[in-house]
Image 1 (tube, rainbow, N blue to C red):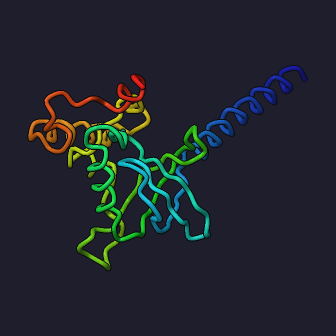
Image 2 (image 1 turned 60 degrees about the horizontal axis):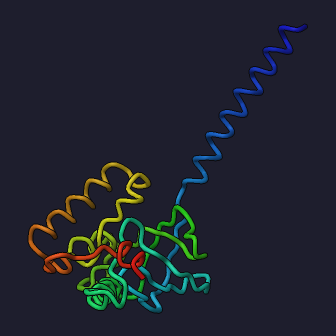
Amino acid sequence: MASATRATRALLGAGAVVAGILLSMVAVHADEIRGTVLRVADGDTILVLTTDSRRRSIRIVGIDAPESAQPFGRESRESLARLVAGGEVRAECPKPSGSGGLVCNVWARPTDCATCAQTINVGLAQIAAGMAWWYRRYAMEQVPEVRARYEAEEQTARAHKRGLWADAKPVPPWDWRRAR
């Protein structure tokens, strides 16, 4: 009888472990949002009207763009506005932001193709244009392949002195905010 009880407890324990794993898999699954861009706040944040008529502030995963008052802040915002000019975006949101908004991978339609799907990774495009830093602080939240692409695009933008990398000593936004 005692061995049956131990076996039952072991089975229940294993079931709890499996349930925990399944729940954690659900927790990391990204919510998908589709909607129309209402406003570009800065080089890494947009306001979207979702298909269910909710207004959502979305911060783009993996990047940190210059603040509005910082050098290249205006250019970064304008670059993002051009990327999402078609208005319709798809966002994959793995986690909420601390400010009540969302932190998402954002995908936009190429501006020269009205019938194309949302295939442009907006964060990666901002880095490639030299309009944002790859936000290494959160690099471990990215899968290795994505991390490698963001790092490579930033290195290429630096080497070609694109956007903010044309500045002799660009100040990362996290340092700029800390100094204020």
